[in-house]
Length: 153
Image (cartoon, rainbow, N blue to C red; front, side):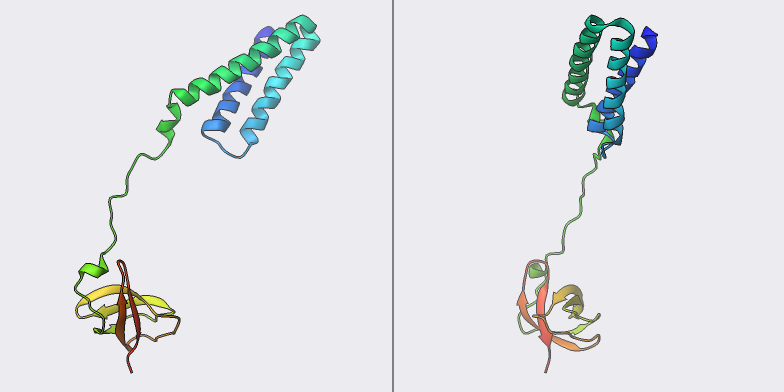
C-alpha cells in the first residue's frame, strides 16, 4: 500500500516536470497534480492526519525541488533545437540596380512579385498598383532587399 502511494506521488511529480519542460498543454500537469493529490488523500485515509500532513509537505518540497533542479540543470536543452540558420538575404542595393532601370515582371505584381532587371532576378513591389506578368517595369526606388517599381508607360 505504501509503495503504491509513493509510486503515485512520484509519477505525479514526473508528469508535472514533463509538463513544465517538454509537453505543453496542461494535460500532463493536471494529471500530475491529480496523482499527487490522490496519493496525499490516500495517505490521509490510510494512515491518518499526521502522516497525511507529512506526506503533503514532503510532496510539495520534492515537487518544487524537482522543478528547480530540472530547470537549473538545463536538462531541457537536450529537447530544444540547437541548429542555427546560416542563410542571408540578397542585398538588392548592392546589385548595381539604379532608379530608372527598366525590367520585366516575371510574375504578376499584386503588389509584390519577381522582376528581371538586366540579368538579375529580384523581389519587387509596386506602390499598390497591379502589374501583369511580362509587362515592362521601371525602378522607382532601391531598398536593401527589394526594389519599388511601376509599370512602364
